Image 1 (cartoon, rainbow, N blue to C red):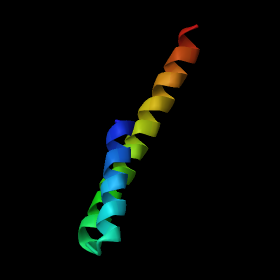
Image 2: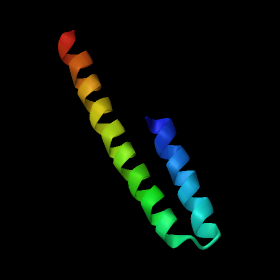
Image 3: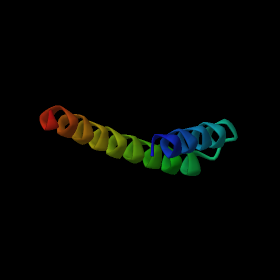
Length: 53
């Protein structure tokens, strides 16, 4: 999931470089959502691993 967040971030950077602001904003929004979902899943997994011991 983190890989896809980085991919969408790179797409946003390239789109912004070429002046496609709408596509850049959309790709950046998707990247932000994927990164937040990654962080939530990471924290949940980390807490479950700590509590399991």
